[in-house]
Length: 105
Image 1 (tube, rainbow, N blue to C red):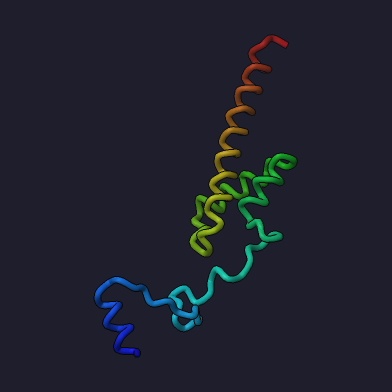
Image 2: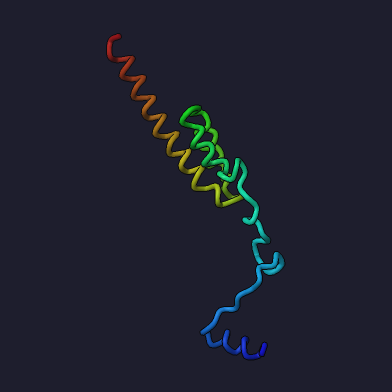
């Protein structure tokens, strides 16, 4: 029977399904553990907290620029969203300050 499976794999018609043991898995179960911060991850939690406390966006931007997501690639999207939010907030803040300074008030 084992020879049959090997022969079918060589033909390319079937794919061998493994049971997912840690020794067979090349990642070693790295992504089986939940993300920190209540399962959101640092990036998405910083994105949500940033609407109340914008410094959290800059913290997440720093983590994004220092490649923190290499530890866990699932963090990348949240950190990128926080970096974009920090950029938009900074541009809005600069425009607001310039309008207030040059409006003559």
